[in-house]
Length: 480
Image (cartoon, rainbow, N blue to C red; front, side, top):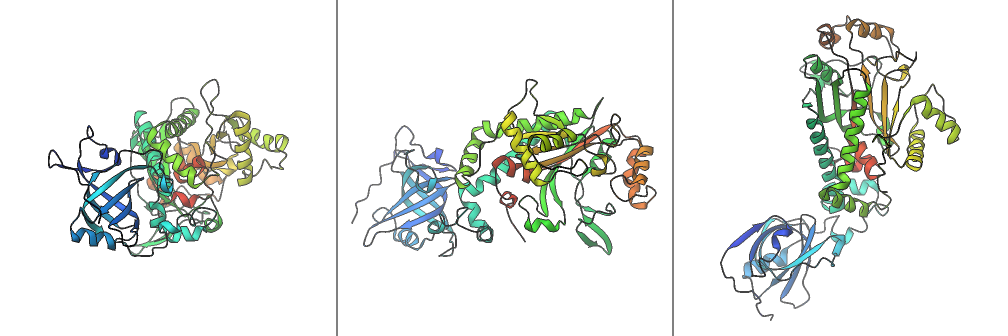
């Protein structure tokens, strides 16, 4: 029988702690604490009066020791019946101070605690598919994508998987921080719409109280309408939907994803919008690598995905990311990279990756802006270039060799917009007299300021920033 080692407490006060920082001994005086934790593993040696519990408090693993001499029989029996992944509340005392060198399971081991009382909040089923014994098997390269997604809840609980979604949250918070500092207004627009653009068959259709409706692919038109309301600068972060058949076989497409939509009025030139988007990306990606709470998460992801390489963010003498025209990018592909690339076709995924690698090596930057796309490749409301016939005031942003953002100066003149709709430069002609277009065109009849905007895929941005092989790893849940 082990003897009791419970210390004497000067004051019978128990503190509730939410993280392991709260377990620091107070001037080395004994203290009682209450901790909510998830069970990592349960170990009792044969005929032993000690049970060792490894428990997770957020991303930290603690060793909780249950001594039969220190606890009531009820607590001892509860400890014997515990299963991995159960959620418990422990009243305990700190047995050992921090040991920053011990790192079981690739997580920081902070201290050992002696259990005084134990309550089971939720008992997990035994033999779960992602128990600690299976954890190494479930690492990328050892487990299939389907195995991990089929056990998504448990997969995400482990620090490295969950770190991706915490970084997604951090990325959104940094976006909001930057845009609000630039006097943007955060708006919320409908996700069920009553009209689509003819020729685009990638909408999800649904019946809405007996009428036809569709899930929105973008909130661009609503943002433009907000600008006509003199809101000047608006943004939205929300889900969009694309019925793309290629999503099932693509590492960069999914049918539902999170988009940052931005629209703003400008004074003189649409490059004011381009400059702001580039500055936002530099801010977000710099702060993700600078702030301690995000640096730790990035390190966790790199443990799970060792192929992920550090993100490069080198700016020129003017503090800008590299920016080239569409035609210059095509020239680089042909003359410097030896690829047969047609000026009349958009970039393939392989060409985007080649350009990304070229600028990473030549300019030390994983961000690249490509400006002045052919008008035939963009939407009907994109402003044609006044300097070069056939081109348009549009751009894409490449991050980590993937297009993550498409933007444009939008036509603001009502008569010019109606003319562009009838011309059908980038698709079938549209009828500006059609009933479905009247709410949208009303914003232009009322006088629309010169403006531009973009749609930026936050899932793909995170995928590119972290160097993940598949975009599905940036989605919290897959399927219903």
